Image (tube, helix red, strand yellow):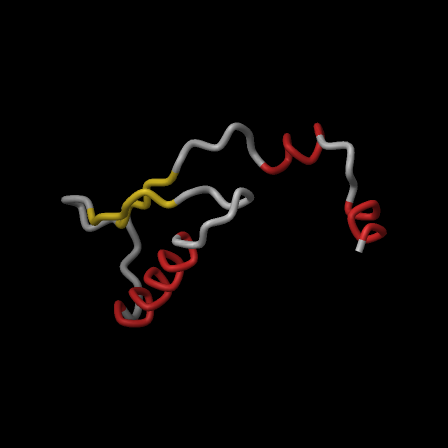
Length: 72
């Protein structure tokens, strides 16, 4: 069962802002491909497939937050 947003206008603005954020081009941001509404009125966002999740990436990366802060 899907929950209907209280205010579709506010929800649409939030979704459109998120879509515009996906349009950023950076190697550290998953690339946005497309978005659409399903026949069940659900909103779908298609992005490139990431090689791993953030937790796995952090566990396999030698740099820690402390080391990153020290470099700046």
